[in-house]
Amino acid sequence: FVDALGGVAISPGLDSGVETSCDGTAHSSASRPALGFFAGLRGGYEFPNRWSVQMLAGYLALDKDVERRFTTTIDATPASYQLTDRLSVSGPVIGAGIGYRLQLSELLDLRTTLTAGALLASSRDDVDARASAEGTNASARVLRSGSRTASANPFLMPELGIGLRIDGFRA
Image 1 (tube, rainbow, N blue to C red):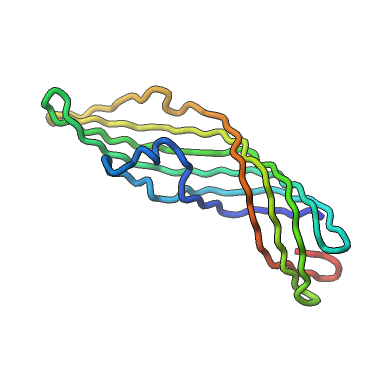
Image 2 (cartoon, rainbow, N blue to C red):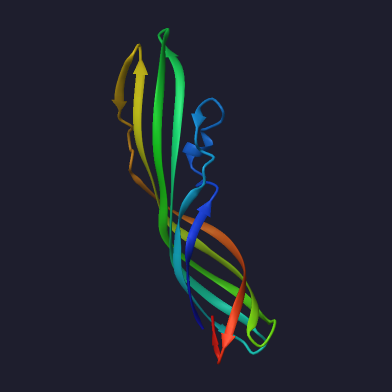
């Protein structure tokens, strides 16, 4: 069998240093979720006992904006900084899994799947920065802003779904 997968991806965070640095000493918007999409294909073989082995290949993209404001004192002069981080994580997803299909009726199935795999991610943090002190505002340059970092992030994805069967076809 082959299944097409796709939809909105939502994550409470991206586990970034930017998000973890928002520890209460800075005002931030780190609590907003990351949003994006997932699209992919899953193929497999279902045995006569309705257990299946499966392979997954797809693409995931997530974005999140975090705004941070810091206030500090430099040589007895109050200064404030405002940073806007545009975080993004994207890349191919690969995995393998097992599944089981429980026939509920002539038309409906209950499907369970457990997939283990990895997101081969490219992560990026584009930073806009502004500084102000004594009534003067200026743009600030952040070193390595926008540079990409590669990583392999493992995942375990449990799924529960309803399937429809009509004339030998499943959806």
